[in-house]
Length: 193
Image (tube, rainbow, N blue to C red; front, side, top):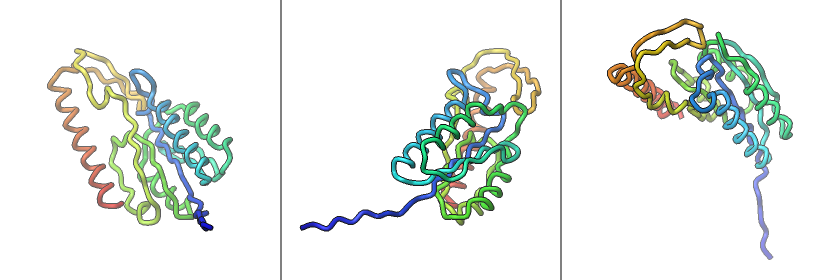
């Protein structure tokens, strides 16, 4: 006779997506579409494990909230909200995100933050109360841009037009800035885990 015990501890899973204008970019698919896929995978996994999920959409303000649920309909709703959200002319405000999540998420939770993390971040206060997991969503062209010559670009967050030569020296400068930014994000994660 073997007595088997299974823990019935229910986790609270929070999926917070940063939907600034920068997610309106992609070479094969928009980053917002990739974000919806990742969010739905996390949510389906949580529901399969019997955990509650909730989700928040942020830009320069709290855009929407899906209350905690164990139902599959919550996954469909959060995916639909991410896909249908229009991020144009919206900026990312990570300080507001951290403050709102700290105030609104009462129970100790695992918070997945989906974003491209190209701005300054500070999740120190949030990580003191919850387990915070960063999921970096980027297009491969952002990570490894190719030299394509003279281009005109539009900033989706501000609608400002930028023109310039995307040559090898510009790309190297860009890659070094992305590497510095990623190093800061990594150090922040390491310090406040």
